[in-house]
Amino acid sequence: MSSIQDVLAGLQKTYLASMPEKISLIESLHSAGDLEKLETEYHKLKGTGRTYGLPEFTQVGATLERICDVAPEALPQAVPLSLSLMARMRDARVQGTSVVIEAEPDFQTLVKIVEAKG
Image 1 (cartoon, one colour):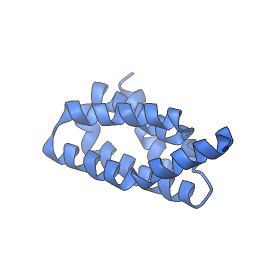
Image 2 (cartoon, helix red, strand yellow; image 1 turned 90 degrees about the horizontal axis):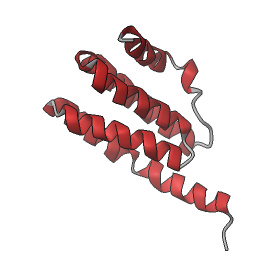
Image 3 (cartoon, rainbow, N blue to C red; image 1 turned 60 degrees about the horizontal axis):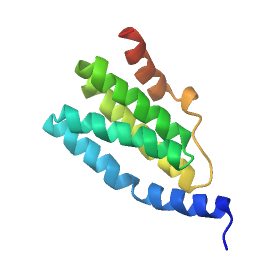
């Protein structure tokens, strides 16, 4: 029987393997201008990051969900930054490391967008 850590590691691996599809979906929703579904996908990212023990995904999801809500005019800048971050975070996790999200300039830019809206 696997330990809880082994089960979580397996779930994380599966989740990370699905990340290119999630990135593609978000890209498509953004291109189509589907704000409601875009916000939903970021909300899901926020929750699944927490569920799978990937806090950096939670932070990006929460920040972009907030941008969808309070600063949709910033999405042309914010979505590409988030997608780039998501790809880097995935790559780092696959390699056995993680991204210090607060130190990432792209994430800092996203946070500034939210802060500018109060």
